[in-house]
Length: 389
Image (cartoon, rainbow, N blue to C red; front, side):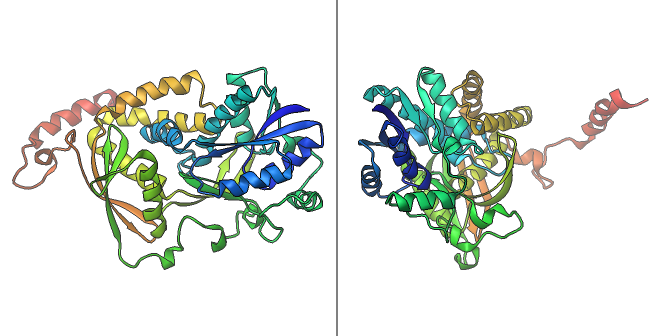
């Protein structure tokens, strides 16, 4: 049997994929990436073995995920279509990278994933893998197998006695990591229907959030969050801590219709408590320390960075070149931001930095004012001169 390394989550698609690949002459080796989803990995491992995997690799990638994938995106201020914080998109090239490394270790000539032909993840997995090793065979069972619906997959799982958690009553497709959670399918496929409260797991209902605001102070060093309320945290622990704080205050819920890379629109629900807090604070700190031209120039580049991430082009030259630019821009993005969290809203209520460009004596209309307003008449005339007749 030909060895094949399957990126395995334990969900419906990848559970069915183990048996499906085995029935076609492959020896499935399951690879479980720990990207902070806080699941019972031993139970998932046992599920893979019971389903037919010959071996299971569990690799903790949380530190690498935060430091090498999440933080660069925060530095860039990259948010896809102004709403999606890219949690799932960021995890895919990391998982694909280690999937290839395991294939090399196991001397497996093939890899597989559980992505659909409609989604973006297939691109993220396969582009990354082919950039690392173009000789690897890549199989995407969901794109080619005989099942047309998730209900048919559930019937197959039942027939083959494959243990799964999903049911026809709760047909949602969920992806989770320490940076966020995405939910699709089921009633969510109708963009007119309000998401049922049952789909949310990281955030409480805003109506049940505390009646008093929660204030926190988030400290940054060169564009990277390092402290919460004066206490230093490791990169991983900081994200988890903000998820708890934000989740209790219902921060980070997103309901959007987005443009997928393959050309279709899809309705997606996201929960990103930590990401929403960090991006809000980071942007406000940039407003304080960056000059106007840098801020305005950075905005379209941030959008491009988000697109590259979303499109699975993480390992490409342009993305790496942009990393160098954003690292340079972030050299003085150091300081403290105070935020107020209240029933779904995340508001900046204070900011300070040793590199602040804000000058009270220039901005004030009080007695400290040193701005000579008489000079503005000449400035305005010269500014408009190229456009006057």
